Length: 425
Image 1 (cartoon, rainbow, N blue to C red):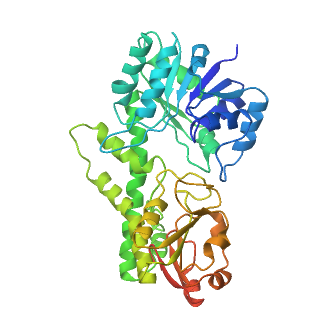
Image 2 (image 1 turned 30 degrees about the horizontal axis):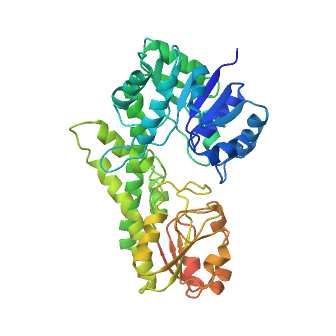
Image 3 (image 1 turned 90 degrees about the vertical axis):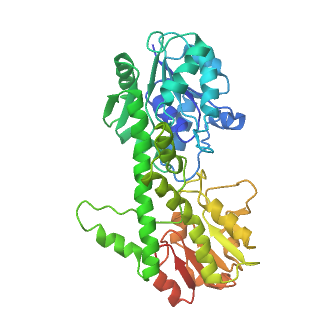
């Protein structure tokens, strides 16, 4: 008998994990509250754009062979063996915003059956499994976790651009409420994960996921602060980084215009929130440093332009990550708002993002560059490395560049007559 897996939340986590299980022969149903997204998936069209190797083709294949379909109807849970939850868990004003998670759990609980396995893949604050997930499921279902159904936390480790690769190859932490649950989780995930599966309890799994992202956030904050120091000293932070990393056990990260995405901007906050009556210092300071970088980019624009009011500024990149369409917590947004507040006329180019709220967005690079007074590189999309600066200068009204991602050579740009400023340069 083929096991049925239900994936709740068909986004950057849910779609690739659903596709992976469907590829391995499971019957997979994805639940999503967006009717347009459900319709796209059922047509074999991947809602995730950007440079995402194999995903679109694989989704089309498993939909066409009947292994994957999508719905808005939670009643399909009744026939499932495993229910995976992959909904967003943002951090709001001083606490997690669990409305999407709680809504999913309420609906799951209505249809939960004995002997089913519920796995939370969403990143959550330490203690959430015990204080939020378990109580809601038990209350709505009338069943007891550990006795009537299994409950676990296997936090995702995906990132745009490597969605399928990370699922298939990275090690995973498997947190279950008891030994039976952990064994079942390892059995299930071993079908799609080539890496090691490390069993532990739910609380440890919660801490591991939030800690690994908080750690990276701190590393980026160090790189950003080092870049600011190098700017003051008039030297190249990227050369400094390269030479520091020649020393064993050193790994200075890459500085930039800001940290975005669903995870890094919030996971240190989730980790700190979970440790009640304790306030982290280093991690929260790192958050402030990284949050300040978009505003530093605005200051660099003011430096090269002097007067920003009324000037056309081309912001290149709206997605937070290179070669992706993911705009979650993008540092481009505070940069755009900061420039508009100064009176600039901002036009945004992104090759992957088709539309975004009230932002003036174009997919035509020449349209963005024509008559611009300043070009601001926010996202290191591969297309931007191919920009011909000589042709760009002819298109622009005023040849000014602010490079937030080390895309251009400062020396080459200045030789061509550009006024240039960059993070770490």
